[in-house]
Image (cartoon, rainbow, N blue to C red):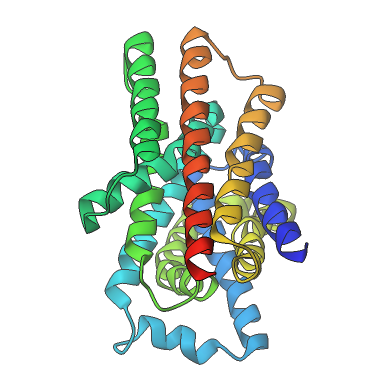
Length: 292
């Protein structure tokens, strides 16, 4: 039960993060990203110092580690963070939730392209439904759902880069923030010197931005805890709590418009998600049967 509580808590934090980012619309998305990187790094440094893992952190970005892969992962995840914050701040939280719904299906396609992984029949049908939803939005709204595709694509590429990486999720994200921190600090310093940025506003504004670390470090620690105690299928199913909460926040809190195109596209996506989850459950049963 502790593992389930941990993954539910992690997905709840991720899913409700739009409430936080929506409250700081006055801060440009790039500055929010810079603060998130800096304060997340501080969180990880404290955590790793307590755990005695500062040396593995430095080794991961050093010559003996995987600095190129970490750098690419940093670029992918920072692009994803920036895209999500921008979407929430500019009235596109619904499209953001759609992106995280279709991300696992994008990941399946990327796995096929990069590693030659086979599609199961259920996965093929789920991908077809997702493509149908994208086509509906494209035709009905006059353009593809670029925000959704960007978020799903960057997160899918991020997962692809990290596939097979020996370091755990918490340590590797700590290394990613370590590589991003000089750029983030440089940007915040440039803003401050030129008379801008939250540092010029008030200590309260900076304090509020410091909380952004909580949407990076805390859920990752919870996810890492859960991943060691739960089956893969359980993790995959519960993670859909994240976009579901994002969608709920977009509808109920931000009151974003939900037109006919969305009323057709989202059920298609949800049907695809259901098939994907069914396939996860089926594969888990086959693995369990093979082990017994």
